[in-house]
Image (cartoon, rainbow, N blue to C red; front, side):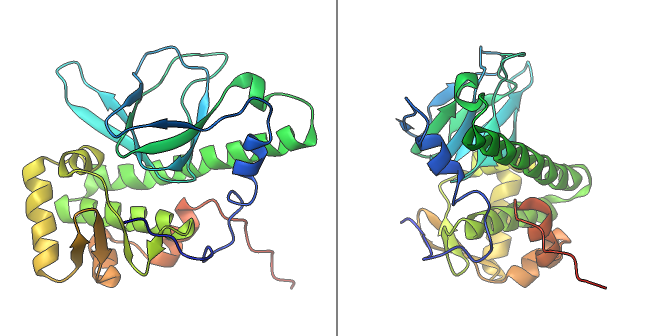
Length: 248
């Protein structure tokens, strides 16, 4: 099941420009890969960034003994810097958590004096800043939160981001991520993830309409568990144009 709303609920400075700017560049093409594909390994040569069009992608780091931490999850319309021209090394492993469609942005594509490319670079910079803000909020929970706090926050973050790009139906959305990958994202074991989600489900906080989707039945309860204000969360982790100042 794929969820799409007719229009975004908030002003979005990406949807109207990012994709069209990229697809307007000569030689640009959409690439597709199935779930489970490793698009880049940590340490591989990489001088590109990426715009995800469909599906979910996990960006992860691994310890020498094999433990993996997903440092960010890319959702549809998300941008990520994988490597740079000056330092052409993948800083993390890039894995398709679902069937994906994406555009790779190489230096030759983004560089240039034209106003369109200048605007593209502005949007890319804004997306990087938004990712940093989102990552800092997640790290705060990883450092100080218990299992319920971390999972509640993760579910709300994913919901808010998907709602922003029109990929929800009420509080229901596609949820292709496995419990193992959700544990890697929240720094929890499979046992902790399973037990906590079951507790949420028994309490009526979440529900599963089908195998690939989740419904946040009580976002207020999740917000309390996560220790967030939903309005503030949206302002902190979404790439929105600021409201103009109120005249004094």
